[in-house]
Image 1 (cartoon, one colour):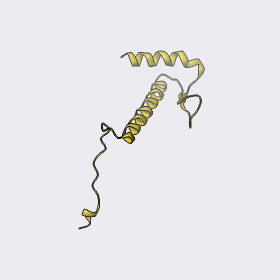
Image 2 (cartoon, rainbow, N blue to C red):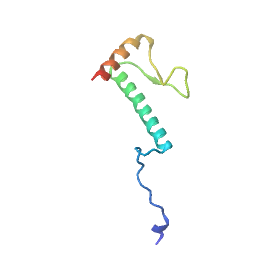
Image 3 (cartoon, rainbow, N blue to C red):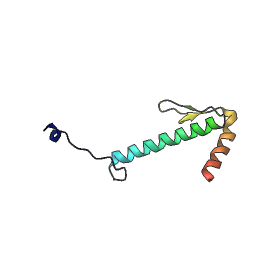
Image 4 (cartoon, one colour):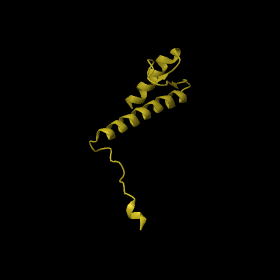
Length: 80
């Protein structure tokens, strides 16, 4: 009897053109990209830390000495 009072919702279709869905999708992609870079860095012994807030340093930081190593590793992942 009370089940009819509960509205039914469908799963969000991110392919629709709703602005909110586009923003959610972009944020999820951004988060996943950050996590991927951190995971790759960890795999190769590079300590990558997430920054907080809207840092001027970007989304993460890493030791300056590992910059070229990280770039080279990410390049090889992107080429494949």
